[in-house]
Image (tube, rainbow, N blue to C red):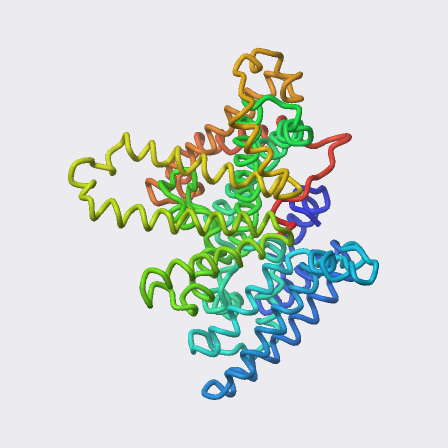
Length: 487
């Protein structure tokens, strides 16, 4: 069941209504049942994997908690088993393409149906094991609470990768919450509507332009390839941020606070800062459970740079099972190493004393530079192979004729000029709203609640109408998966 399907539009209001009507002592059972039903709609075979992972990891967590002093072996077994199952489902085809040749088999002969969200709930399980072992989180004794942590439907498919130490206390106390909290429900609903605007009005409409450019990129002019690159970067952000806002909004209406996953990534001035603003739950997970255990910043600069490269190569593998993902991860790691080296050299040369790199102009230059680097690297997410990705980039720089853009929008991008104007206007409004919310350190819902009632009513009504009128759905529309479902 996808957030953008009619199934979900029926499921959510019914689920919320029952949630607020049932006795408080039944809330946890109802949340788990709703989460199981939600995931079962994706396929019973995948549900079997999720249930087994939940039951087995619950038992391992108890063993680690009971033997905290000497539970290192249990922890190791738990991590290897969890990572091993993920590797089998995610990389069987990739590995089979190498090993199967000797037996006359192809990679497709080893392919398995990967359970949706396995990358996310596996990382939640591993973080739980480690946190229990280190004493950051008590081993959950109640299976019902733990099962909700793993299967909670707003975050089961594409995160965020929530930590047990933060989420489990909310599960334990949910039966004591006030039955109805109007502000929380309103804030959550505003976030859900905002997420639908990002996904249906912007991301799914941009998908047509992106597909037109990428599907036959070898015959396109370099100027169009630049536009295609920028459009895909924007589509990817609006798609994933849209999912996240819907997930966090639904959780908010139920009374749960999930961790933020985005913080205006387009404002990043370098690649390191970008990863502090993009997919935050993944980047902090990699920092806490891989980079720091490897040694982090300890052991000298060379060791630090090696740790960065390993961390981002793993990030690439987490995203997908091909050389293009390894290349993408390695490139992000290399960019950060280069940034550290450049900063060190600049400091030694005293460049900061003669040029103020923190002023408005240089901040803009640095943001545009980061935007271009990150956008170009995301080409490898969209192109089916690393070789074709490199070809796309080469054509961007060697086959540019600005006069090409003088043609009709429909001919160039597969959409009309009016279509592009709607997408552009909504993109500007969404990014402006996110910027103002961050600047004032408030949520969108809090910002609206600070306005007069008639004003916020009109804004919310107009937002809903925008989704209804301009959203990409209807006859012939295929409810597109959120892009990060595949990761």
